[in-house]
Image (tube, rainbow, N blue to C red; front, side):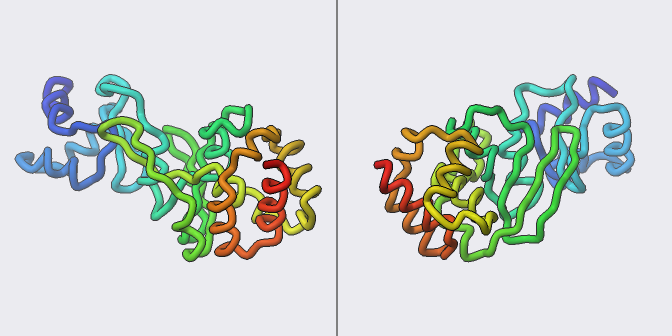
Length: 212
């Protein structure tokens, strides 16, 4: 089975793949679904969700790109909140759970590669402030810019009614340094604020202007 699966592994270039790609490599099998069941049972492949897989440890050629997985597991979506803030170096903590924003209903996936959470955001708020990162030639993913990630994080709080409230939450709660806030792009924040129409985001914009 190992050598047989090795030939299949050679036909799939990425560490993650979908059901259609897998079935294409098994098109000469008489019972491809039975083969998939065997591969899952012996750990050659691992199911993350229906129709999405990664290779088992013995057949991996590189590290799994979890950010790319986050986009694939449920979408359309983009990575945001604490994970994006950590990715951009705005908060000191390393964040394990990847949380994404999506116009679909909120949902959480417990997978062998970690927990992937998705939070509903109105469709009109999705497009602005999202950037495409190329992790390597085979992996890309959508993630919030620093401005968007902070706006997403504070927009769920209804009690941030002043710039001082926002300062306390962002600088003392999230531990984002003042100099990092001062580097945020005001035009992008204003574009986000125009779409979000959220008091906390408006106060964030004013705070950044005061610090810049």
